[in-house]
Length: 214
Image (cartoon, rainbow, N blue to C red):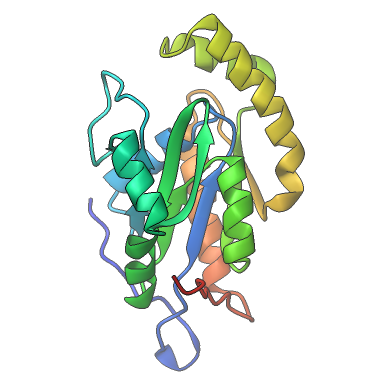
């Protein structure tokens, strides 16, 4: 069943402040699965699609999983300051387009975006009032099994991602919430994200997102 966008409850019946929800965590932690289920359920938020120069994988769809573009086009967008944040990860460029985020927030819509830990740190500086959620697997062994099981990286790349994940786990203090994505229980991780948003909507002192000028 599709969900309709709701203004929610706030003093005087006014519309609550829109949230900027940043979903991050190690590669293979389960971020994409959580986002996919939220989208399929018709969750009332604007989902921002990341732009990347990475080659499209077989099962991926352009403009749904990512906006796949050339390095030249990415450079043009970066030089034109069209990204909220961008970084090179595992040899490829990734960036969050600025304008869709700004437009959605101005329209009073919650925004959910997915970035790596480096991107989360950048956004934390730009928009410290955003809600930062760190998604992790139940163990490093489970993460290794997921990375190897999806068969999209070489053994060398898998080892590199695991080493990077160990470093990223040290960035936990940067985040507001921790969500564990357990095998076969993605529904619980999705419910946790939804519960976080509900709780944030009921804060006595609401977060107010102010993005820096272009």
